[in-house]
Every structure is written in structure tokens, then in C-alpha cells.
Length: 122
Image 1 (cartoon, helix red, strand yellow):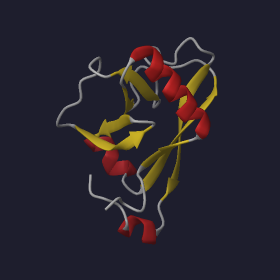
Image 2 (tube, helix red, strand yellow; image 1 turned 180 degrees about the vertical axis):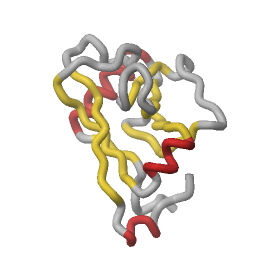
Image 3 (cartoon, one colour; image 1 turned 45 degrees about the vertical axis):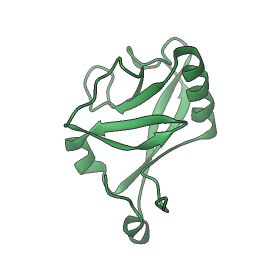
Image 4 (cartoon, one colour; image 1 turned 60 degrees about the vertical axis):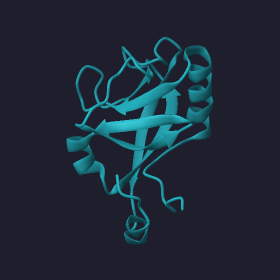
């Protein structure tokens, strides 16, 4: 059974950009940056170019792309839904949207108590 509440979702604009990037680069993935180099941006990579490990958790998928963050960062965000959006600006230095005049942006909202009960374990 599918969980009734998702931990990560994306706006229609983000889903359009994800589809474009996947069409150009093949399968992609996201990793929520923890503050190094490009601040705390959601970073988009071709699968295989960014290695995840035991210190990362997969929160779900957006547009068919797995979305990860570090386990230590997740401890702070575990009661929060992550909403990936697209805004005008410069993408992260290593992120696939760089150079397009837009960038991915993480928005968020705190889950309600009822929603927390419907979350699947990570």
C-alpha cells in the first residue's frame, strides 16, 4: 500500500525541468545539499555521478528521480515535507540545471500530527 503522505514532492515547474534534464542526461537523482559549496540547494546529478551511501537516506522520488539527503540532516527535517520548486537564478555549480537561468529551490512545510502517522518509515 502506498503511503498517504509523501516526504518529498515537486511543483509542476520542477517536474517539467526534471523531465527535460532526464531527457538530456538519462536517469538522474537529487541530493539535498547540507550547506557546503552551494548552500543548502537541492542538487541534481546524473545517476552514477553522485554516490550515495549508508550516511544517506532516500526520502522518495520526484519525477522518477530518487531524492536523498544525509541521515544527520534528515534528523532535523524528519517532520517536514520537502517541496522542490524552480525559480529564476543560477543553479548549483555541479547541479544539472546550472546555466539555464533557473535553479531548483527547496521549500518546506511541517507535517500535521495526522500526516506524521501516515508516513512510511525511511
